[in-house]
Length: 365
Ligand SMILES: Cc1ncc(COP(=O)(O)O)c(C=O)c1O
Figure (cartoon, rainbow, N blue to C red):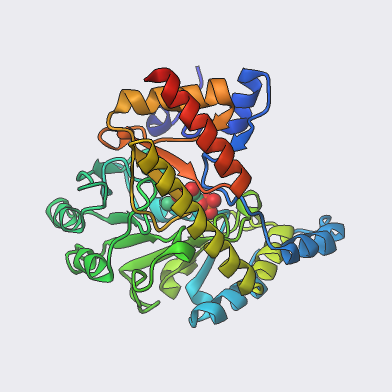
């Protein structure tokens, strides 16, 4: 018997995300429509592909572990100093660094019940104690998060804004209300993975040197680079520097750094993706209404549709997978488990999904 740490030995065996590849292995045939992981259906900018090709022959070299050029470019993009930018192996990695930096076993962490599972995964992995106020009308409840933070003396308060899995967003004022009640020494973890799709005025102006906040962004969504694993944090220099004690220095590979730089230098492409995603969300809203499902307002690259109850949502998801080879995901906990979450696909994928969903709902009626 291996002598696991108390923490890991006590954790349940989990597969936080069953990947579409695992479903394909189980089903014995390919997934036809992959709209479950909020990847970009529109792929990366052609300039990204060129940059990867150009850098491919240097794959024998390690990356620059300081990510100097990319951090410099990101700093310019955001009007902050390079030392305010920290790179991570996707936003998920940065969430792990934040939790590991701040949480000792038993320390309280506030997030909405059913919020982004990877953050919860890291908190469980480092022994944090959850305080999870419920969503309210499928939105994060700023007042409840603020009150819970104050009452529990939380060390971390997590908010994904715009939100996964609901697609909703909080106003700047609502976010300020959370900040205002943050306990001394606590950190507000503002996960802005979907910031490229956020409505005007929902991303707060924050002093990068404000020690109470870290904002986290990614190239996985609008930039269409989920497979490259590039995320970054904007935060106080001392906080960003603290990650150097524990981070995986060579994790954001040479090719990924070059790819991110090329994408950052192609804002027209991102604007186009944003436009196409807006059209896709509109299509999904129309489809949901037609089928008597409630589409939730979304400022992300997906739309959550309310199926009315959890069993119906789970059955719909299973039928879409087994009968139609359509891959979707849905939240795991009630009451969010009434939702199915549909990533915006290409126009052809959207048509295919619409036909598949109509068939599934007709058969189960
Ligand atoms: C809220 C949120 N944060 C972070 C991530 C992960 O981003 P990355 O691919 O950069 O790890 C996702 C991906 O779905 C997300 O929805």
